[in-house]
Amino acid sequence: MHILWAHDHTFYFNDSGKFFSGGKLPYAVWERYLGVFSSLTVACRGQKVPSDDSLKRKTLSSGPNVDFLVLPSLSNPVNKLTKRGYVDQLLTEAVGKADAVIARMPSEIGSEAIRVARKLGKPYAVEMVACCWDGLWNYGNLQGKLYAPLALVKTRALVKKAPFALYVTEQFLQRRYPCSGGTTAACSNVEIPEPDPEVLEKRLAGIRPGKRDITVGLIGSLNGKTKGIDVALKAFAGLRQEMPDARLRILGDGPSDGWKSLAERLGVADGVEFCGVLPSGAAVFEWLDGIDIYIQPSFQEGLPRATIEAMSRACPVLGSTAGGIPELIAPDCLHQPGNVKQLTQQLVEAAGNDEWRRVQAKANFNRAHQYTKEKLDQRRREFWLSFRDYVRANSEQPDYIPEGAEAL
Image (cartoon, rainbow, N blue to C red; front, side, top):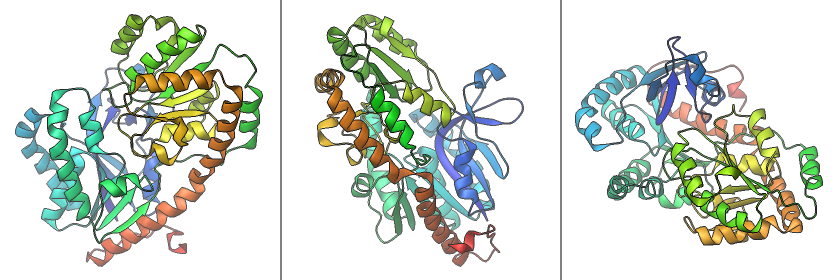
């Protein structure tokens, strides 16, 4: 059974024809689907890179039984007017060859794929991973704010009528984008290995009385303002007034020049390090082991992978109330999105309170056990097997059943 998977994610490719991700969508993500379906076509945005050097810190997304269909961006008004017909043509051909569509939402390409699937009578499912209102309203420009109400209404309508909807949160996205009458499930798109008790032991041993060279960490895209990079820098500037030896490390894809300029204006450039991108897994975990407090000051989230990964490394965490973050950490660890003063106060108190960091390290480590790969794989596979059966019932084409899948 062949699936078209659609989202606005930008993949990087070179002359070899191989595609790479900034870290969020390595080939391992496709293996989640390939355990149930035979092959995928990934409809996405793409950017050709001039040399292999540009791919050194990216993760490989290409692999067996996965093809890529690069489409123009539909995230600006000009392209919506001039490129939509071309996108419709390519999607119509691709969806016509597929047995079903999986649209990761919110996304313009995902929305178009759903529209084409309906037109062609193809089964489809949605994956809700974030809130389009939060992202557009807080993206940082007038265009996003003007489009936010329309995107909210459009996305709600698409999810409401979806026959299958998978949410990465337990409550937040379900409340904002309900699915009426379809089959639904809650399953984070995060996958972490079973947390090792030794990780917690090392974390607790590293919380030393009187430590002043506190390292704060943040993982998030540097493109746009949705991850709250500016909030982090401003709050860190407040922390530096109390702890001049504190450092801020930021891991994420995208240009850093603008953020470096802001750090310079705030007088903290000497304490801020932009670490680029690391391959998902061990490299990211090692990076997290080198920080003392993790922050997620986002304006938009589903259920943030980076936060759960930080929790699995027993990091004390401070985060905003955006999306599903309140489902992960305690109320006294939360701040309102954009509230620099509130986050600054929390950072200062956390950095100076050894016992608080010990308590949070233990609580977060224990909470992370709910997001292990084994548990989520089981829940996710059961959902996609149900979708596969639905597709089979609505198609006269013979389907593919992976070895061992019927065991569920």
